[in-house]
Length: 325
Ligand code: T6T
Image (cartoon, rainbow, N blue to C red; front, top):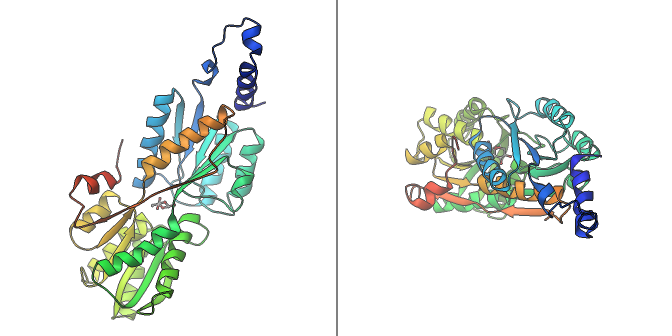
């Protein structure tokens, strides 16, 4: 029986007054402190997960829970799976995880559930989330992708060729953003979607894709790069091609490098998620599950559009990701 299951049994007993009746003197809630939570990031060193980790740590500290944070060196399920296996073996009460792939991480996460560990999916999800997790917390990624077309128009481009740079198929978040963008473009006959490319989360590949696309399409008007590293690379590619301000770049996420690119005019808008908030809510849901309380199955967090107009305001600054807590 896992610690979480034991605690649930104890919480149940407390609620019917069994332990009180036995005179054990355990106050309701006393068993709740000191839960062990492990947060498995999508990838190490990513401002998005760094900021989420700040939220996770703050919420855990407030609740008296302990947190361990781990993550793969690359956004790659073959690297994340062994990390998850080791975490399962260490028997935490709950795991918060951003799975690297909808399919490849499904079965490994089913093992966590079988081991009695409460799982909360933060950011990304898997194909059958209900089989593994008590709660899923993420941005409205599809709506965020659609917002990218509005941002292109707000940047002054009302027609022409646009393209997408994502990470790779099989990542729930970026797939949804890419689809949201593509569908929005399809609904607007002034625009033409010339293709979806994939950076494998490598800025250098995103830069190459950008320069090649510009060479092949001198009339390219805008690029939507659907995550931090793709956007970082797209900005580099735009600079290499000398097209700053001429070809619009809309990036998802708001890491320090992206904010810099926005300020220097290489990128025109950033769709910033609320990773800190995803982290705090993730801990709340994990603790609820550990204590046998009802969970919110799905929580959708919002996003903020950062442009040169608000980047230096308190609003814009608050939306930017952190590089440390
Ligand atoms: O965009 C975020 C995250 O939401 C996505 O799932 C993977 O990429 C990021 O971590 C940014 O690098």
